[in-house]
Amino acid sequence: MKIKDVVYAVGRSGYFNKDLAAVKAGAKPNGTVYDGKPITPGYTEIVQAGYIVSVMLVLEDGSVATGECADVIFSGLAGRDPLFVPAEHMPLLESRVRDWLVGRDIGAFRAAAEEIDRMQFDGKRLHTALRYGITQALLAAAAVAGRCTIAEMVSREYGSTIRTEPVDILASCHRGDMLQLDRMIIKKVAMMPHGSFTTAPDLGPGGSVMLAYAKEVADRIKAIGAPGYKPRIHLDVYGTLGDLFGDDMDALCDFLGRVKAAVEPFDFLIETPVIADSQQGQIDLFARLRAGLKARGIKIGVIADEWCNTLEDVRLFVDTQAVDYIQIKTPDLGGINNSIEAVLYCKSHGVGCCLGGTANETDLSARICAQVGLATGPDFMLSKPGIGADEGVMILTNEMLRTIALIGRTAG
Image 1 (cartoon, helix red, strand yellow):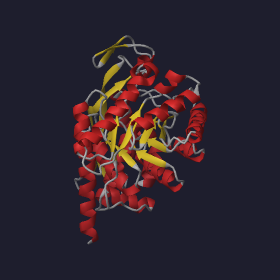
Image 2 (cartoon, one colour; image 1 turned 135 degrees about the vertical axis):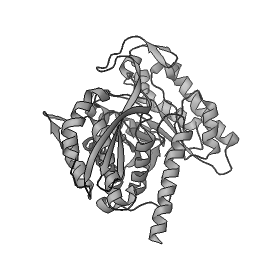
Image 3 (cartoon, rainbow, N blue to C red; image 1 turned 120 degrees about the horizontal axis):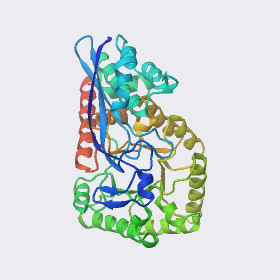
Image 4 (cartoon, rainbow, N blue to C red; image 1 turned 120 degrees about the vertical axis):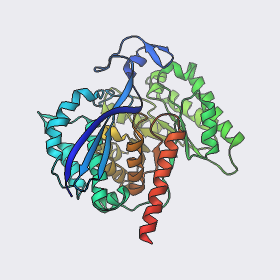
């Protein structure tokens, strides 16, 4: 089956973009926005509404397969592509990308995805957001042509085994939203609460605010959680512990040990405790951190995010055994084919992974990722879109359960 036409629509993302460099440089918070000027190129405000582009492939039989182009919240940071502004890319989409798509046979996904992901126009690859959305559409189209689910298409082309139970979900909410935390506990989510700390002042003197928050989360789980419910506690600190402790790795390890003690008996995962000025610096810092934690007998899962933006980056972090888990941030990797390969590479080399992404995605991209997760089996997935948890957990969970039921019906 071939692509007959391509239709584009610019829409809203599930969250917004934020200039983290400006925030860390001391911009004054003012509700959701910040007073001050942006620092990162491409931003006109420190906090901006997020936008996406829907890529709708109209097939010969009239079916429509859709993918959605989106970037992450903190675009332009730590080696990522710049802020995604749809208007800047529409001329190329409407001309040369359309020409590449129309008339193309979509019976097989992998080869087409790899081609568009590598392709250069005027010496430059497409923005990661475009590659992400276009390859989603190609994957959905291949599933339509193959009369199967997206999960089955991934399994056929990559030789993976489809899970028969949903992947664990990391539910994400703001630190101040304790009512949302309660709803996570009531729903027995596998991991929580993400609870971002984006600047050193967020941590409090000596990390006191973070320590108190971690204990509050653990205490609330114990207070209202069902008998036997033992979720993993996850916090993302966007390098702020490095801002707080500087080069004092001993102090950082000791502090993380205190956090781990505060959340007992729950397992604890920390994402991006430090952000270095370079990729190699990031790997070196993680190696020192893991060695320090091991020497102290502190069992914490360390997760890489920043400086691990491409499939090649994922392979490098895995090969150096720099971390316990890698956050495979799907929009950053460009083509969804790269996220598929990244999960499979992590699994085959004994490193944990999260098939993640960003709150700045959409319901559609989240559902496609849910099926990819079923087909590849990451350790957990990030709830998305948005940071309300309820919607993201519902979207991912129901998509996985529907897919499992459909596959079970055809298998039977």
